Amino acid sequence: MHGTRLTLLIGLSLACVAHADVRTPVLKWQYGGCTSFCQTGWYSSPAIADVDGDGRAEVIAGSYDLVSLDGATGALLHRVASSARIWPGIAVADLNRDGHLSVVIGRNNGTATAFDAATLVPRGGWPVTPFPGNEIRALALGDLDANGSYAIVVSRNWRITFRVDGAAVIDLNFEDYH
Image 1 (tube, one colour):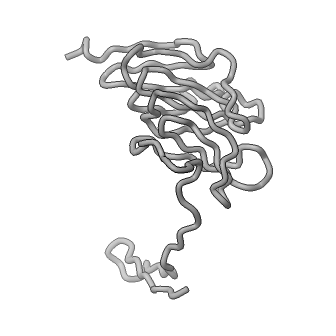
Image 2 (cartoon, rainbow, N blue to C red):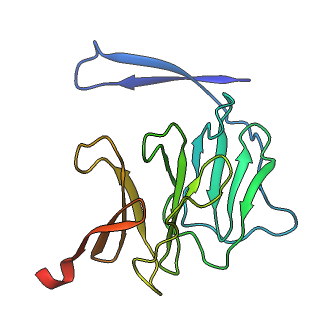
């Protein structure tokens, strides 16, 4: 590979100079999980994590179907078929500190689902439909009350719903506060 030297100047002082060897990217694989046709999926960002504990990263990607792919080869591991598009980026975390990762998605039909990351089987209590008939446009995970467990936050337009293990915690409609 041919490298190009990149110099990064940090701040105004030339005393803070970082050098990196930047190489031309090499395509590893493409069209993971697709055969003759790939579904439209330009909204959802994939996630990368070792979901089965084998020391190798998998890629979790969504269009209409949710797929788990071997990170090294792009080979399909699991598929959850759907007619509803996955809109926001895919989130991965150990939601309830049980040592097992979950994959969380939101769809354009207003449903959110938490799956076991290794198998893509829905977790108990999921899916939920906080916005029937309206797409979930954003999704995030975080420990909102500092109890060591994640909350799942989904939103559409100005309305935000917080979900923990499929149960509603808070439902705010910011449109009421113009």
